[in-house]
Amino acid sequence: MSELDIEKKASHSGDIVTEEAIHGDADAGHMHRSLKGRQVSMIAIAGTLGTGLFLGSGKALTNGGPVGALLGYLIVGGLVGLMMYALGEMMVWDPSAGGFIEFSSRYVDPAQGFAMGWQFWFQAVMTCPTEIVAASIVIEFWDTNNNHKAIYIAVMLIGILLVNFAGVKYFGEFEFWFATLKILTAIGLIIVLLVVDLGGAPDHDRRGFRYWRLEPFNNGFFDLVPPSKARFLGFWAVFTQAAFSYGGMEGLAMICLEAANPRVSMRTAVRAIFYRIVLLYVFAILLIGMCVQRSDPNLLQANAEATGTAAESPFVIIIDNAKIKVLPHIINAVVLTSAFSAGNEFLYSSSRSLFMLAQEGKAPRILARVNSRGVPVPSLLICALFACLGFLACGKAGANDAFNWFSNITTLGSLITWMGIAFAHIRWTKGMKVQGLSRSELPFSSFLMPWGSWVVLISFAIITFFNGFTACITHPFDYQSFISAYINIPFFAILFVGWKIAKRTKWVSYEEMDCSTHYVEDSVVYSKY
Image (tube, rainbow, N blue to C red; front, side):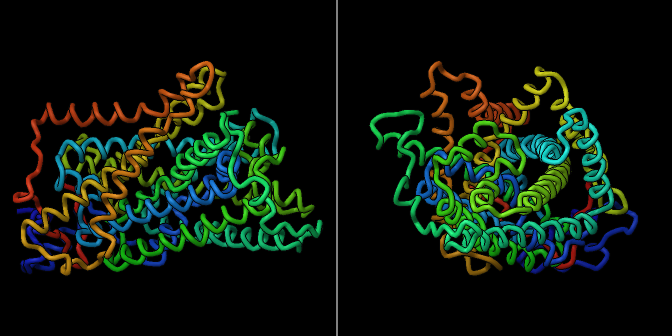
């Protein structure tokens, strides 16, 4: 019996496991639990804090108005928080498992594990070059020569490859300091907006809740009548933008196998999500809506052009309106580092998800191989090749359109993953109850569960169904936007049905469900191949 098999036998029942079984052969490839608690917590708090807030929040304000944008981010933020608590319960219970990929296979159906794994991998591997391209566009704020874009993309691609090849220890430290920079910048910008709103800027204009009174919602969304219809649909459009901003948060599960003392660090990280949502995203959206009007010409022009630079950021528009100098350059530099950091994280997440798929036999075995530094090199190389798709953005119109289309079809990726996590959690809690396992045994639990998972599943299903509604109210019908808004659904269905037919998988019954924890204290996860 291999070391991995012995570790898998260990459960909450108290099986005895030897030191050799836990740590295995020193020459065998295994994941290194080198991520410290402070690194895990900081990555959790600032993991996807970047373009979604610094740039995308302006579009949310334009679509929904200050009240609509705030409500949209609050609602979606609450749902994402519930989803993370559901995922946190499963991760802390069994941090040796392969994240939500293995949870879906064990608690629902191996076909769902296959579909969710490849869906998440495709989402992450395509978002990586998207972030790299975004970073290269940000540099155009200082260098307007478009011919230099390929050079910037190459430099940043090499940079994130070096960080990932160095090992998780260096990856964690790199992300810790970049996350610290992002959080400090977000807090600093919130303070600046508060000063601007209270009249402390050079223009001495005390705005207060002026724009909330003038235009709380968007009465002219797509020129729809009556205004009540425009207000509601403008508010509804914020949901998709908010989901994009929060997207990638579930990637925290990918670092579970490499976190030191995972039960403590993961529990702390999941709880930190609440503070990130309330104190950073929601408070920032509140102040943005107080400091700039939804129909501000500069904001409308920025959203129409969608340049990807700091000029598009509502923070910069507010600062320019308040006649504050220098800060736009600082914000642009932070947006640049945020995009680079996000590309680094998505390359990491995609390589680990591919490793997990290979561990379960849902991808070629060679992709589960790990070197002495705990890096799944074959998986990382495959993901790096996909990251090179970013060079398409430097080509002619056709190549650039192809890259944009590939990027857009990942829009629903996070929503589908979130629903899959909620469904796996619902079945897991039911399976525990059927098998006589009490929730009091869980090292981490929330009083909002399991009902919170039902709220997540139903709510995101509704948001997903109406995700592409704007394509239906335009004239003529925008078929390209409609396809990109929903193509993830048939993609997921093909993966699920194809694996189910090919492997003749069965729905996991509550009685046969493997609800035990496989984690042994201080153990590591070995490559099966």
